Length: 437
Ligand SMILES: *Cc1c(COP(=O)(O)O)cnc(C)c1O
Image 1 (cartoon, rainbow, N blue to C red):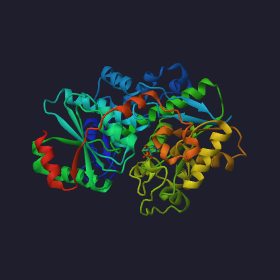
Image 2: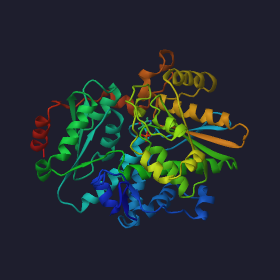
Image 3: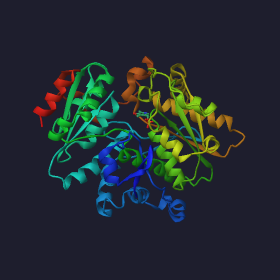
């Protein structure tokens, strides 16, 4: 399988090169040259496949000229080493909990898979490589955790001082080892700017080999297909013959885009719901076909505060025809007050605690199922992308005491922060990278 740039289909590279580059030289996102179809034998007997074997069947065609089967199995085992429970909220509504990984959010899956890939590439490379990540909170933690102790890989994380939650800061700053953390006196854009400057700095890169673990990287995107298959497999075990709808709380649209890819490989998903907060570029696009990003707004579900979702071009590649896209995907936006109300209601009625992102996913699913209630045979799954404790400060005061703190977090909160403070000045950052090679 080769990958082409969405800006130029003649530029084709191997999986390894697509992972190492992240983005094509013409700034296009990489896309697989064909979409493999899973055999009907697998699709109809999902529940007979053990989860690691199922994941292997799904991703092997995308990487087969890069990894041996054994290596790939090893990477999958390290990636899917926590549960993905499907919790029934209502007869027809299920929460797919993606937050049981080390940093309590779904990004752990993509980050761990990418770390496995890069770790393997590095086995044959004598020079160490440095992964640079600017983070507004969540991504940095997942990447740090994924790459922790991977030989010949160093990670340098930049986060804006005072702008991440206490929990996020602990996740970013307490690992040590091959993870170095820089607390930047500036905002997220300043952090991103430093990383961009470093990637443009040819002199620097002669001395220190740099790579990125950006969310558009194919090694982070593709493994997100796994949990759609895992959820479907759990639903099969309940031996239901209802049509299945997935609602995905979306920001950069990588997660949803992986679901659509899974469907095009043959997973019989009836419909997708793209649920957003008031950053509603896609809901507006679905109404009128005009793609018109506005400036990003800050909301309670802040991991989805994206005005110009980078993965949406991949969705358009999967659905070149607008009518097809409309038939396969609906998009709804929800405000912060609606999000809070959903968290309160679901707690009151079902004793289930949503985080603000999951709440947006829940609302989208509920709206779609209501609109479609002439068709009562649909069964809905929303992706619960983060543990509620991660966003505890966003949840109404009276509910906070109801959130059960996972044991791993209690230990984390006792650890000591190790971070170096730096100004947002590029020369300082550059010297840091040269001095700590
Ligand atoms: C990143 C993130 C999202 C958005 O996912 P995309 O793939 O960017 O659409 C949703 N919820 C949480 C908790 C996240 O961290």
